[in-house]
Length: 437
Image 1: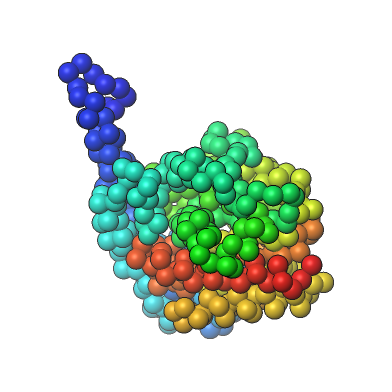
Image 2: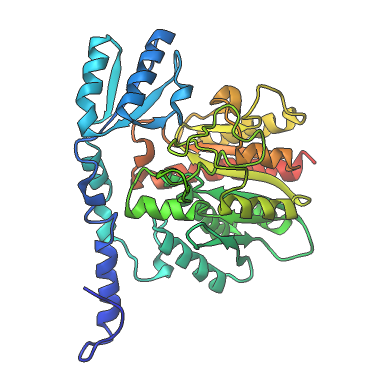
């Protein structure tokens, strides 16, 4: 079926219906990735000893599991919560190994395909016909998000200005929304979402933030103060190529989509590609690994574009916020080393208050602290780079949940997740305005 143009005898009314029909049939919707995850499982284990950890690393490497948590096999050690996605072909071998070695485990997701299908039932019923009825409680494709951005740029020109900072590896525009009341030069906050493609709740939050800002600007004194005194540079989808690929081909794709001339594996971890202790601990030099640091710092056009923009504006950007999933954490520098940042008291105070504000809504608990000790050591991260380049407040959120759904957080949890996160972000922003330089 083609929708390229109006054919003889075809009514004009047919075209939007045709487009809608294609949207329903597009990859990632009704055919759901060609049934590729049928029988796949997500299994959790927590090694009790270093011997167990070593054995689990070895079997995971042999079976080529898709690690959901932590992001690299090298992080698996005694006491580490480890979630692995294992294809049907390897799940029997893994379960047999765990049972034989008397390693305790829990099957988090019995059949990944069925879980995907259950979560996507609402997709064919979405209101996609007009942006005025844009639904913030469902996940949206890259095309839909970019159309939404264009729409807001036209309809809210008093508070929003949309622009591009460059092109992705595959030639997609890297769009930013500049949000705030236009006045003379003032301080700014950078927010990016979707640096890792499969973390869909992240772009959903960026959209939610913009929606809440526009809806409550007149009625909420705190929001009015934020938008009057600060600009927010918001990048709803950082890794545009990877995010698009996660909708059309592989729901659990993490990296960018750049090609490597010497390896068949594609993509770089866009959160290991920054010029701060690049390719040191917590990053891989192998192109097939999920934490591949790339051939050189800022090798990825997406990373280079954002780094160039932040460098250009760093004198007035006071905070950098990056949104990830999943783990329920609020992290601040350093990631690459165990050390205390110079403005620790200010940053720690902001994190403590933000986590308390978040918990006040639904009782959801977040851990907070330096990324190296709270999560794990990783080099070449955007948060560390931002901090080292003069942005005094740098945070990375790991949104819901803690593994029950993992990367497949259901759409019914978008609203509560975004509502509580919104309070945390407002808290950090107000802290920035009131307390610290």
